[in-house]
Image 1 (tube, rainbow, N blue to C red):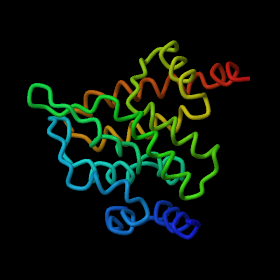
Image 2: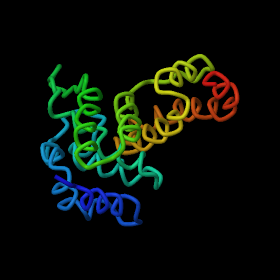
Image 3: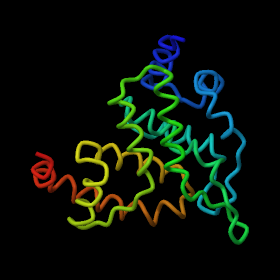
Image 4: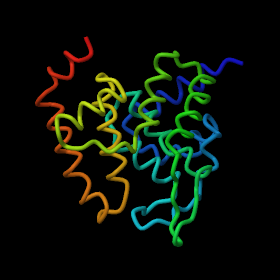
Length: 195
């Protein structure tokens, strides 16, 4: 089957200035894998939205770049499959890898190139990776995802955090911003390592 029309429509929606939350129904028709996230509550003090609404909030917060938009749209699709309850709090350990695998299936079906799919897969797989705000910490992240994907990863992580509770993101955003600054101030060092 050819899904090029659906891919083009999805790209158009993601790269327009519309609030993606107004396109829920159409997104679910193109990516039915997200249906499991609708109304899936996250019983966790850091979360203020159900999984699907969190995904849409995050998608709205990233820059208008197709890799970023699709990474945001699919970053937590694995959560409903990985939930465990610990001390009456939902935990989603391993949802990143599960979501990355689902993203491969979705994006391949829609006809994105294998190179593109691999980038989105990598960003989703490591979207919860913690980068220490040191040269070594940023190098570790660059080695993990590839230097070219570090800016994408950081942008998704910032948008993801900002879609959590304010109490949670106020603690973590400054740490992530410090890592971003180290990356930006030393980009030439990281670029040399990949040549």
